[in-house]
Length: 251
Image: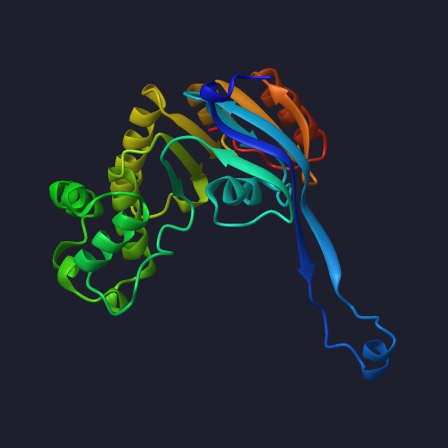
């Protein structure tokens, strides 16, 4: 077990269960206490320690619990059971537009979102030029958020999150949207984070990308940890996927 001051993230017996609601129950089902609700176990008793400065890549089939794990670590979702602890300023690149208000302008939303990420008003003001330049949404920065496209909201969300100087960065590759130039800017910024001393936790199907940018791999299937280790897990994962004829991106 690692010393507490060496840890960035610790999960103890963490489980997340979702209730899947089907068609409306009948009168008799309500009377006798039966319904068509079904439980889906997204995470099942996960124990995980991530040391400060580690670069952890998470792999697994669709529905294996990868994004749920990221949301639990980030505090976006709450576990039904278990304990989640983090040490350091955590920034999540998952729900990037979650803190935006449609009636506020881009500038006003930057201040609001930055505050939620732990930035002071002074820090936000000094970073505003960098944020506006990175988002590259032109005059819309002074327009209300309801006039933004979904892509523009994500670009601004990215810009604010990356300006927050995280100590722990949580990233789901599915948020990498936008045109080629913007994706290139995002990738360059994230690679700079990988080279720094911050802790990075990311989900990706691009195995080559994980080999280039991660130190350790966590493999999830059906909400459980299949294995944790080095790049040998990526090779094993790829072989199993090929046998099942499931496409795996190689980067």
